[in-house]
Length: 82
Image (cartoon, rainbow, N blue to C red; front, side):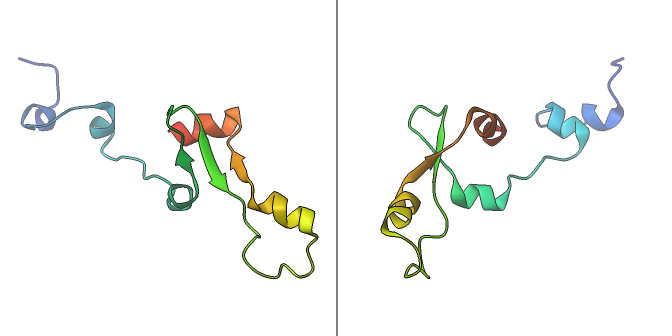
């Protein structure tokens, strides 16, 4: 006899660690909408916030900076890959 619990023996699908735990973590909905992976798959980019309205009080240099693409740091990339 196998030492696996009976509920795992009767299953007809994968018994990965996530299935053994009984749950899977959901991706953060906000992160899904904000971040895009680059073609290499090893880096991520996003747009900057604060560029869409109330721009009259912002300097032209600031508006240009807000229009630029922001790239993930090494620590952010590690978390985004999960």
